[in-house]
View 1: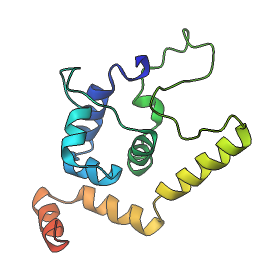
View 2 (view 1 turned 90 degrees about the vertical axis):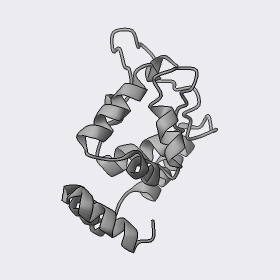
View 3 (view 1 turned 180 degrees about the horizontal axis):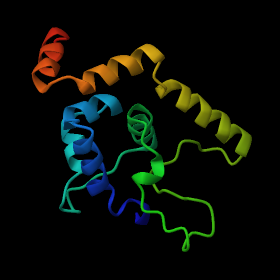
View 4 (view 1 turned 90 degrees about the horizontal axis):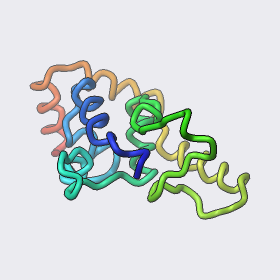
Length: 138
């Protein structure tokens, strides 16, 4: 997976710089914390990778460009980007694939209200975050 060679380090850096816990990322991507920890694993034998839905969920919800998580060498890439295990469509018809991608993006797109809540949650203190999570029963 040449496009994901440094994904684990990049994800951890982005998560830490955004003051997000593994739990926060897990909630954004619809997985458990153990899965996020495996994405960040130092040992490649213990590492796993997100599927395209999980990757898009993270990118959209954190407003992170996809290319900032991937190893893209523009000089070496003369063709289409191929990510094994990260496919969103089984169709060879480009219009069908684009429609499926649009549907997936619409599914994970946050509303203005959700974006504002997330922005406020991120800016608050760790103690306030814990209190909010306790109220939510998490």
